[in-house]
Image (cartoon, rainbow, N blue to C red; front, side):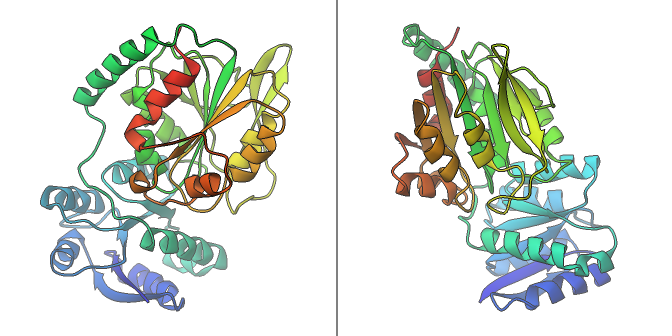
Amino acid sequence: MKKILVVDDSALMRRVLCDIINSDNRFEVQDRAVNGLEALDLLSRKTYDAVVLDVNMPQMNGLELLKELNKRKISAKVMMASTDTREGAKTTLDALELGALDFVHKPNNAMDCRNEVFKDEMLSILAVVADSRAPVFGKTFSMEEAKTSKKVVELVSRHTSSVSGNKIVALASSTGGPKALQSVIPRLPKNLKAPVVVVQHMPAGFTASLAERLDSLSEIRVKEAAEGDTLEAGTVYIAKGGKHLNVQSSMGKYTIHYTDQPNREGVKPCANYMYESLQDSRFDQVVCVVMTGMGADGTEGIKRLKTKKKIHVIAQEASTCAVYGMPKSVVTAGLSDQIVPLDQIAQEIIMNVGVK
């Protein structure tokens, strides 16, 4: 049985969250804390399989707790309980950057947490977080790494002049993805010779903030993909949360199109739809990148894509994944051409598609 710590300043919300967690025989709430200070004291003395952490609390809030854990090098597997607002989305991204593994967006009213949809979602995410690899705190993309990245780009560009053809990069990630993307996207140059389309499993309202965050860190342009966007080389398109992204071909151009089909692989957006939409495209090659995340999203789509197109599949190496699920599925299916540590993925993308 997994031991859980619940941290929330609202007595009612704590009780509701604890009731939900204890209703599942996989989990047991071992301790409760009313703020970050209490949680810090507990985490410095005890080990838990997962921590459910509120953001806004007195004395020490959720972000301050994560910073303190970083500072003291205390590793914890944290699931944030975030509100579904634009401000909440930015705070959640800050938390993911600081080492939280995933999040559930919590209704403002504690009684609304008792509905089955929220309960199922929360328990599903908690199970993944509890089984995840504990994060390495303090590792974020730095300016020094950016300089190193530019040197790699310069070196690689000398050897990619012979890289020809019309290519696209299609990347899929889930749990641990927002932080992992910060180790990949900022390392890509603005003169990359291909567009990059990213499906990151996130609910509606969070992907715009993710795109803004990545754009602020990157030389390459990053945006949330809008309906009808024409794909351009040197731009990263982040799929909107809550919709399935497809790439459509028209008049020699490729555009973004969204559908509202049911969840697939339990998620929306689903990377399988993205990969399958590229089957009839005229790209000479699709570079498929599958990164950290639970489940097997991407495998079926890549398998179908391979029957129609020339592809090159890069899977994230297990020890660098928060959750070795999606990449493992691709590797097990015999679809991977390369298995690469997280900090080398950008370099391999550049090697495969080239720079202008």
